[in-house]
Figure 1 (cartoon, rainbow, N blue to C red):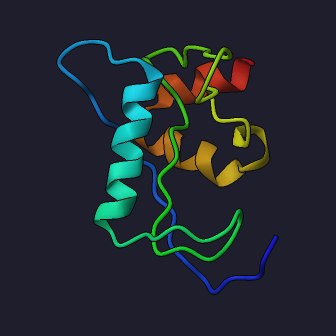
Figure 2: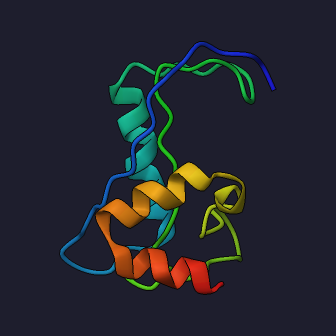
Amino acid sequence: MITQGDFHNQVLLARSPEAWPAERWLDVCLGAEVGCGRRPTYRWGPRRADADLILLGRHGEVVSAGSPTVPHPGLPDRPFWHRLIAEIDGEVAATLAER
């Protein structure tokens, strides 16, 4: 991993009028990155924006076939995500804690 300067992290809750597949949400994330000025670099390289699909659905549905994998494979290693999720929705955070 490359050392980078400090940056902010946040977790957002997004809803759609109907159930979207993980691929569509990933497209939204990638579009947000580009909209914030992200340009292709190299894996783990510095970036202007990084949007990850962490969870899908009210109960943290599991999507393991294809791309993306949901919940995000890095979720267990990022306790700050758990804290931010708990601030938004304690019920979802409790579901994660049970896993």
